[in-house]
Image (cartoon, rainbow, N blue to C red):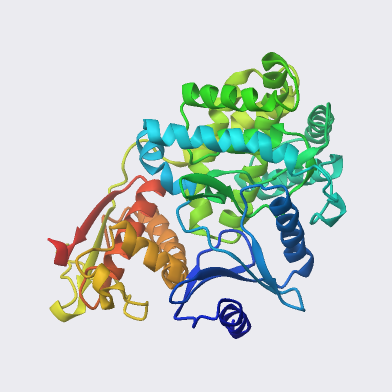
Length: 467
């Protein structure tokens, strides 16, 4: 870290006044925002040199092509540290939050989505022009081997843990059929690989693309499926169609393809991408126990159920039968009637004492949030609470509260499941901090949301000091 600070100060001729940890997702890289008096940059630390250099080389090429990506400013001699342009912290996922949560997208949100998907068509073609795909990581091209790897990722990390009985041979036969269909047609554009709203930053009212280091040569359909069918984006069908037409209008400047032919091939990529995402959620959530991925599974299952209405039985009868069984099995895991268990969750201030357990059971879990960096120490946050976006952003940038809650989610899972099994009626969690305003409120709210999403129990959330 000190290496990045030293080079930030050398390049900017400015003192580094603050270093913020930026929360990652599935990546092993560490991200930091380095701030001086007048400048900020993003610092990256990664042990995988090949992956780092894939991003760096792509970034240099994209800059020459005048594409909307961050500029790489400095790379260390050992290739394990680099500095890049800071485009801000507002992702497209944040920008469309109201639409995602309500299903009703504003004109402003739709306009930004249209800008983004038009830019995708430009990016896919211009990024490939003159680019040496041999510098890609971990492979240079979308081919049958990595298609089958992704499909087996789904099989072993999601389908098998779901306890669905199936024939390996019949399933592999249909995986082979799907792979052959996916490889039909042109394959000479840049495939972003993870083109979704969290990997798009809104800067100066324009979309900028980040986290493309897994890109490779491949067909355009994959990225369109990734973007329009992102599980948590919650696009209604009419908006998805509107955005697809916007994309095709831009695509036809580079590649004249009929709408019907495009849609026919796209549907296979939608199915493939959905299975690939479920595999990732299974590995990161079911095996690594990362709460963010566990919480995303219901959205992906809902997506899958909708996709299955597209009559894939002709091409993949055995696979589609298994997927229907998978959806039915998953829906049965969450009973339609509420368990008798009431989970009460408090946020509180230690100065005013630990909350009383009114159930008569004598208490429950009490978690001390005071070791986490306190937003209340800064004037701009003093009038806000852990429910306000500036405070949420502050806490999540620091990163401590994410790992803190991941441990609590795992503990809550075991306790709630056992209490439901035994027919218990009351469980209590309390989160305390200095004032009962920021860290404890954030933690209590997120645990309540996590439990509501995952279990059919009554959740009673009380922010005591906020009345």
